[in-house]
Image (cartoon, rainbow, N blue to C red; front, top):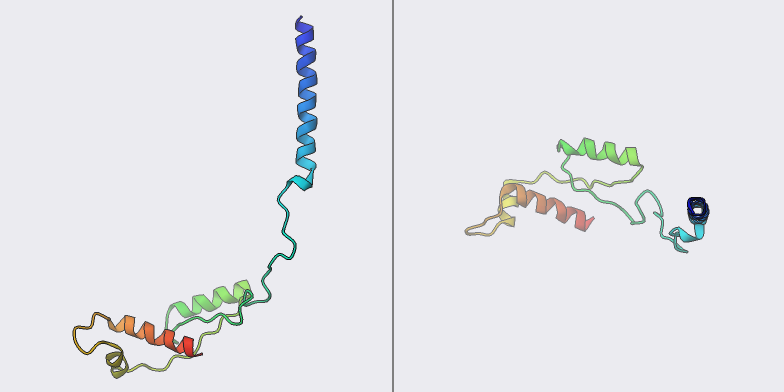
Length: 116
C-alpha cells in the first residue's frame, strides 16, 4: 500500500512539474503589448514642447537642466523678465490681498509660459 501511495505521489509530482513548466514557457499566457502601443514620439515625450518655469537665478535651474540632459528630454525654459514691485502690486488685489510676493512672481512666470 505504501508503494502504491509513493507511485501515485511520484506521478502527481511529475504531472505538476510538467504543467508548471508548460505554463512558465507558454508566452501566450503572459500579458502582451497591445497592437499600436503608444510610445514616446521624441525627446519631448510626444508633446510639442515641455516648458518649465524657472527664473534665471533660481538654484533649481541647474539641477533641472542637468536632469533633462541626463534623460535626453528637451525642456524649454522661457526667459523671464525682471519683475518689478509695481508688477507684483498690479497682480495683487487693491485691498486685503492675501497673495504673497513669491506667489505673485510665480503666477507672473507661469503667465509668460502660457503666452509662449
